[in-house]
Image (cartoon, rainbow, N blue to C red; front, side, top):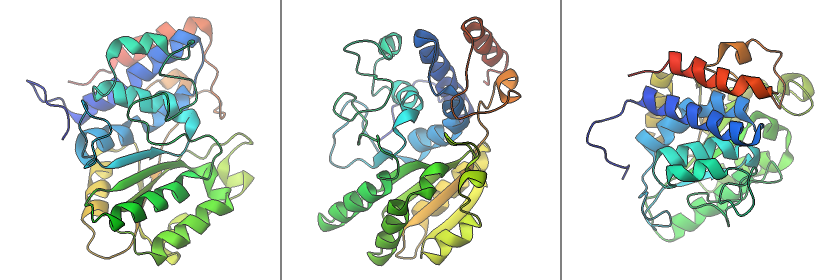
Length: 280
């Protein structure tokens, strides 16, 4: 179950809170993958406050849905979601990236409650998710496995081997979420090694496929509901087209790279811009 509050909080506000906390953590170290965090915040808000079954006070509850972060450098985004979901206490935000922190700059499962895997080398997350989904099937569990991966991971052969395996084993408890921001370390994903037409490829691999605007909350909600409720014995994938640095126009307009540089005097400015667009 999701954490309860006296007054319901809108998903728009949850997404805003995740963005704000991500930037706050970036300010602690003066760096971080905030561009990706800002872009994927809507997806994380729907994941944790609409779709996932979990208990904040018991991150290892056996009946939980598993949320795998294949992209370890997106950890700042997942920490913000875990802080917002009260899996982690808010005061730990200030420890981001410091010695002995439970919030290292790249995510590690052994450090952080609520982080299911260590997503270091990219392209491994979906394979792990297939294994988890098979294990849950063997235990006759009704839990789902969600795997958040990047568009850059589509260039890894292991991703497509896992996609084949998921379809072969009819893993209808597996939902893959692709954050497609068209950016990886070597440049634009579509120019480095294009996977297009991406939706047709997943479909050909036997997956129930949806492609949406990942910054449109209503579209994300509908896609997550469709994925969970699809009645065919196949794995599901949601390709989310997202915008790097979403919500902070002066960063959105900057020449986007894999690691968006935020100058020392821009962190407070970024938080102020977010404040001005704070939803109810």
